[in-house]
Image (cartoon, rainbow over all chains, first blue to last red; front, top):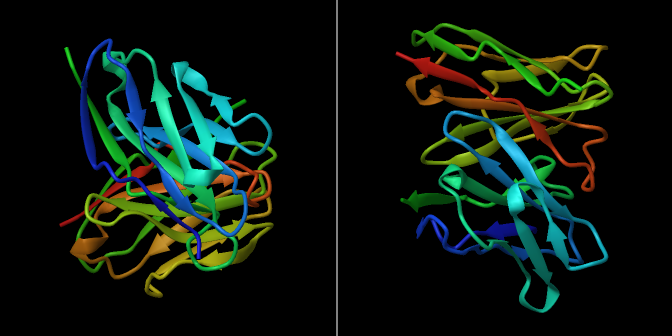
Length: 115
Length: 114
């Protein structure tokens, strides 16, 4: 069965510092991969997606993610974090079969930004 | 293009009551999914509708039900509310609901059961 693991529940970085959020997946083949962001009290917004091709994917708000098949990872990165990036971030893969809906989400990583 | 619209944004209900939440998907999107989000359980899938048919269902009791109309708008209903039903209910739409069709989320309905 497919699954997504986000090992870090909470990360705090200083404004201007670089950021990397980890995501590992379990999947039978090369998956489609997604990163979503959720600001407090809001819905989820799609940051970026990987379908195929170039393993480095650019998204909105200056985020990028790299697909590494050998490590079953799809880590999210940003070179310089802004205070407005404080939010919760979710990694997701499609669900084929089962009762988990269209996408299987990780538990999320909450990002705090220090001034 | 308008995004996914959920109404109402906030609801306060009493235990034992029932509630109906509404979701209008992005124009052209035929798949609508519902998720419950709580601090303890995270995002949990409720059900998915495509072309007025429930195509997928999560592990929730029968008190949770939904439907989709011919214009793709969807409603979910929770009967006999319990305190544990307090959560953010998120609706998401996509063109086809398949793996390569990203979900687009609304801002959710915050339900508080007292």
